Length: 382
Figure 1 (spheres, rainbow, N blue to C red):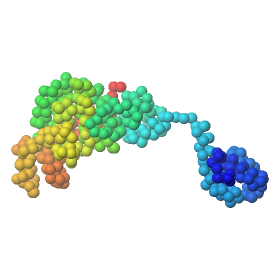
Figure 2 (tube, rainbow, N blue to C red; figure 1 turned 60 degrees about the vertical axis):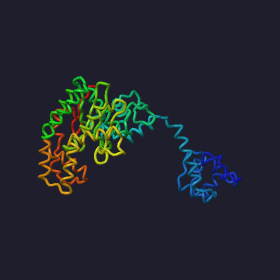
Figure 3 (cartoon, one colour; figure 1 turned 180 degrees about the vertical axis):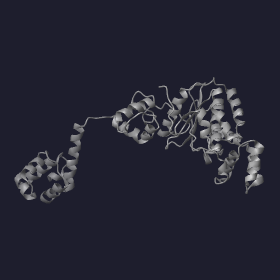
Figure 4 (tube, rainbow, N blue to C red; figure 1 turned 120 degrees about the vertical axis):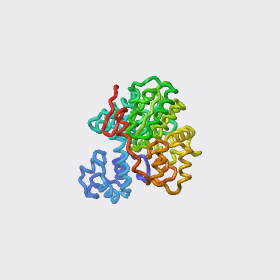
């Protein structure tokens, strides 16, 4: 069997030496044949000088062995040497997962982790452990092998888990009145009396605090697409978090009431109710919607505009909805026309109508709430 047909050679020098012996050549002869200095050939055979593509082609022509064979041996030899020389670091694979799955740069910009330079890996690792309340990188729960501390009712992405951790940290620092289920129902009744005028929403943080609900507004991470969340710090500490990524009166009241229905029904105690893309089909009550979400959607829609009344209005006015009808209907219900416009858009699919009534709410609600995002970093007592 010819030397180059075996797999016993681990370096290009070993193969060349065997081929020279087969032919009865010396290294000097090989140097003359391939037009290379003898010292260079000596270094290649002793594996002190690597073979490049040009030399591999010369060897192929002189010795009848594929250039790719020489280059493959060189590659494997270089890799073997590197594995011996390079210090193993299991954290590299963890770091790769963290930097792939988490929007590190955005978290730095938002002030969630403190790092002067994204290239300062050690500092970022330390800050991520602090952020996720972990004692080691392996414990950060977005990693596939980490023990999951946060059970969610739907699969959650790493960015969504990070957003949730920020909400949880801010909520944990809040001081609110003692939670009472009766007080929550009374609070919802109080909120229903605020629907006529957008500016009345400024009372929302106070009303929720007085019934024991920790209310937090955290701008969503770009990849998270979160609308709201309901979870419990313990059996007597419900938390409602909103992202207000759609800054409209209809979306604000729908998502808020949706999360409060979760609170009323004690959803979120065993698994966090993490709500994303809470518009369109996800705001419906069809058979493909999970039961917890269906009842929350139904309660939220009826809170904004009573179900029977909006259905009657649509039956009477469809397919043409005049602005005067919209205003008259909302006046009769004592709610802002933006809430009717939102429900009409959802039920008819016409999202281009009456948009001037979809007033912005964040600037109204934020001054009285715990807010993180839009250039504002909420302080944490860590």
